[in-house]
Length: 246
Image 1 (cartoon, rainbow, N blue to C red):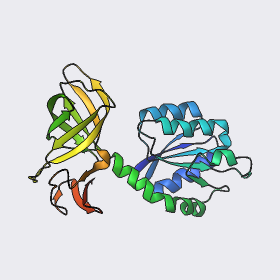
Image 2 (cartoon, helix red, strand yellow):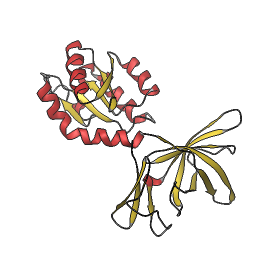
Image 3 (cartoon, helix red, strand yellow):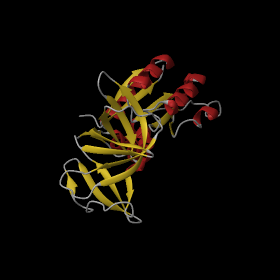
Image 4 (cartoon, rainbow, N blue to C red):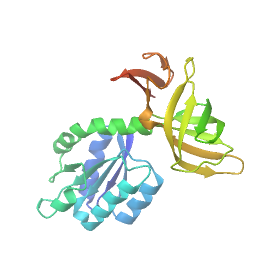
């Protein structure tokens, strides 16, 4: 199974071939396209751990990097440019990406560039992975009745919920839930990311305040104990972080 998915945008077939082969060896599958409009459609439909754009596309490369940062799902993706032989001519475009693959491309040069970026790609993969879990959840809002609902999934920084009460994206709430095999509840200051209303239910996504809860806010689950797929581990300054694992 592939570790993650990369979007590779270039009108240069040899570059597409050598990069996709090198990424495959690192368990990264690729979506290949040769023009910006197709790439933008893919960015709006899929989640990518990394986005690689050929700087020879000129202004299109700038537009693509800007589109990545505007994309709700891909704004934290790790970005790469594919450099031109004339570095001075593409200097302005290089500033838009985090890393640059230099031409002429080779397996050795690609791996050299990927090595310092690989940890970021792995982190992005963990951040986005959703662990399906159904838990009773209480949503508390200032000056309003609390909402009792059920979780759909949880990730390193958020949770999806199903509720019959519509909520407004951007609204600040307090979320309380208890993990399986734990007695103490988790309480997190959270923000509604999006809400989609169906026939009977609203599906919402919340950001759990970087998945960190202050020890002074709540009696936390014991650090070092694990729920299948959800690991509780200590981090500095009296906090606990929940790490969603596969």
